[in-house]
Length: 426
Image 1 (spheres, rainbow, N blue to C red):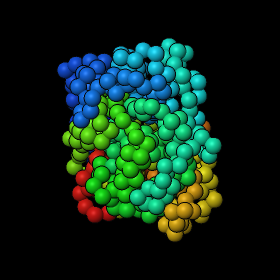
Image 2 (tube, rainbow, N blue to C red):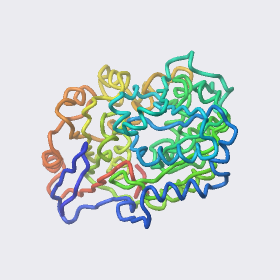
Image 3 (cartoon, rainbow, N blue to C red):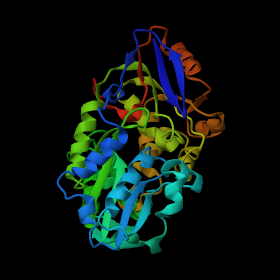
């Protein structure tokens, strides 16, 4: 069989045995009956559990729209123009600020903004990039259920109306992206992010892909959204081509819940126990760095035998994605050492990128990872205890040599888009 794997802005075609297990989201087959614009407009006109945002905007002078940054494939060129038009429908003179939710990521560049939002909107609208390390930009809103301090961007707190846009996908420790996540970690202080992403919460068996029930990370996030007075959301579900296939607008919790149910219905796949698992992070913009690509590796982890080999194909043209993340592995003798060290760290002592390091260490301590990436990432990958391989074909040859020609192979063409029901306990 021939399988196409997204890699950067391209697709890599690889020939695999017919016996290969292919795990794909049903989103690849889902065909909406309306255009992207029609789906978004319909959602805005028929909000879930809320008045239309055009009604909420009446009389408001200072409105803030939280939007996703360059690492998220939210199709803002489609959503933002319609969102802005709806907000201004009954209040054309309101002052709107578009706040880019970077979380703990680096700042979005001007070129990335134009690529994501479109040149016209970047020129005509007021954008502010959230900087999580700037204490002077934050306002204190009390304690989270976990006990951590809730500090978020003052622009959001001072707004007369706070709304957000985003997309919903399975998330490897928050359960799902979207909704409340635009507040925490989106526009939160790094101190708040550190507390929410602490070792204890990441280690919880409730903090897993597709699960919100009893998820301590999700609980903090919902609390943060309520305290921030997030009034309205516009969230979309997308396909492999990053096109809108469904839209959900309205109450930040009811609309998000409905969106998560839709995505879950498409994303759940039955797991397998494979000797070799090949996956990707869905191509650009999600596979720009190693940091983001850990997400898809968790899907492969759920399908690999305890000693199985994982082949990750992610472009990583932007390198590691987090200096602390990189240094944690570079300065350790092994992934097991990283995991053991992090599990002893208290919430208040959480450091930058610790959560991502913890999950990657968990995977690397149990599985050999062959990493297909841009050649510029070769040294970084080797420093982080992974083996760089130029192509998927070569990686598969290496894996088969180690596991035998009759090894069981599974592929997850887009590891970030599935929720795996594990076949057996790992």
